[in-house]
Image (tube, rainbow, N blue to C red; front, top):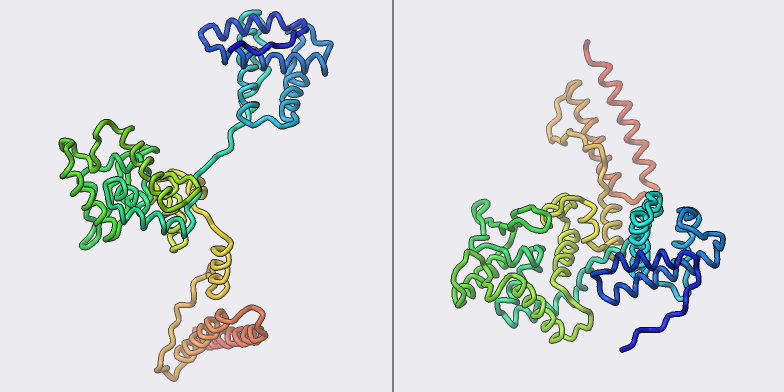
Length: 381
């Protein structure tokens, strides 16, 4: 295949830039050499069009030359994808660093800042929909092999796939009578943790132990046998999940990490607090946990109705309790008034704010407060 014919570049800086390209790409592939040349052509044609007075390297400035070129890259029609723009910025930055050394011009190094490179958008796998989750779990249970039980373990504990393949044979740990936890080894963030589990997860671990005992791979202290190596086992689990996805007719690409997001969303909807969820997932920052859980409009509506029906108040309710027998003395009278205040306050909180009775109850509570104040003044000093 012949190389694409390029139009001649007529610019005073073309020669020094091409010399820098040859110096940088000495041990690189032909495609890398072509990328550096394309970046150079973009930059020099931009200079020739918008800043024709720039004839030497000493005239280059960050503003307006570099910043103008960055803006020009972002305004192309059709637009350049972010990864392509990043490659152009990185390539030109590398060339200016090389020219700073070749031409003994240290100022060229300061033309670019670290934040000039467009950062890729953070992409996190989204949770499965309830329908997808149900279909996949049913198919995993039906197949009931090593890979499917391991994938179910990931789904119901929220562990990473890498943590799953590193689980030890004795990963079940007793916490209290009738309570067990899954010991997750040092993972991605160099943290280990104990994840509370139910009877279903215990059954999954026992099944995996049974399959491990039948494996031809000698015991090595791990729950999952590695016929070749760790990477091959990870690839096998991902491949089996793809087969399950195809079998149930899901067009969307499913990866094991989606089980972790699904687990996080399920826990949050069940009432688990964010600090507890952060511990369950093995995160070191609440910001990361926030990215894992997904809230739908239905979740927002449910939370809103729950808060409106049973509002939480910063101040704790009065410690006064209603008693059936009240002594006929000053302390007894004060106790009765305080009990009435508490009962009315609890009743008022149960009413919607739009109810006209709330204002009347507020008046009654205020009167009882004044009565309690007078009773305290009657106490002997």
